[in-house]
Image 1: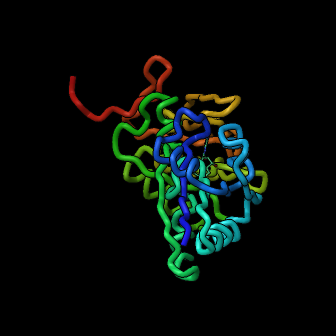
Image 2 (image 1 turned 45 degrees about the horizontal axis):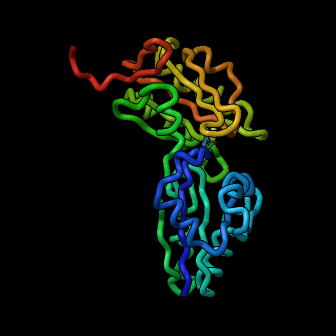
Amino acid sequence: MGKLYVVGIGPGDGRYLTEAARAALEEADVLCGYTLYVELLKPFWPEKATYSTGMTGEMERCRWCLEQAAGGKTVALICSGDAGIYGMAAPVLELRKEYGEAEVEIIPGITAALSGGALLGAPLGHDFCVISLSDRLTDWAQIEERLRCAARGDFAICLYNPASRHRRDYLQRACDILLSEKSPETVCGLARSIGREGESIRILPLSELRGTEADMFTTVFIGSSQTRELDGRMVTPRGYRT
Ligand code: SAH
């Protein structure tokens, strides 16, 4: 019996690959994942066999990896950021039984909320929620309800999958819901292509975020009522009194 590692590789910059992730990738006979992530790792292991599929081949990719592991291979299934956060760890564990209980190990990685948060400053210094705006697997009505609840709870909010080619206005729709509960002055931030070529950040009020175009390589941060901009950094105080 082989082994399947489900590996979070962090935002993309090799410096943010953990030692455990590096060891698993090193040990693997084959690296499998979404084409872009396989390409990011190729320079580190140019000789290693790879298997990549497009964006929507997730289940096929999980099954292929489980099959390989059941057949005696050591496989690394690559996820950006963390393997368990909108990643492949859950579907792999759901499918595992069908493949003779192949051995599976999940290796965590630095998720976009953390790498992007560090670039912006400390937007998640107090309680926060992470919400994906992708309605590919979740009803939009439920996403709206979660946004409303997070705003009412005055959480800082981190939005993943804020837009794609087919969902251009989702960030705007999300902002409209947030604006019904929060001040238009609320400090917000964008982190784009974290740890990759063209990395950029921007801090702006919620009223302006509404008219901003985001893409699938952007993570969006919405402050709580306590979040401030301090010398160009987005900071949510922990609440210590000075
Ligand atoms: N497992 C990943 C999330 C996958 S969902 C993680 O833990 O980070 C894909 C979304 O994550 C993207 O639409 C974007 O919102 C965010 N994301 C992932 N990597 C990113 C990066 N390098 N820069 C900016 N956002 C990123």
